[in-house]
Length: 111
Image (cartoon, rainbow, N blue to C red):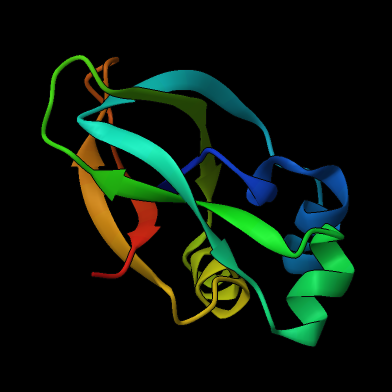
């Protein structure tokens, strides 16, 4: 099983149903050293699923005072591949450690 941190549209029920075919279960957690910016989405399928033209995107600051709250979901490897397909090219998937001590994948802004 994989761990995936969501701070944005992957927390929306419709996005979960469209992307994974089910609603996900998770636990709240905090990521330190990041702030939330945004990217403009042009992918038609992602726009239809999320209903949002601008999506949140994490930007690394490295500052302990910058934190982002979200949810860590437990998903399968196949579901992680589906999440990769959902996230547009403006994102990069990396592993990070969270306030709880859990290590999980997270999508951050490229560049």
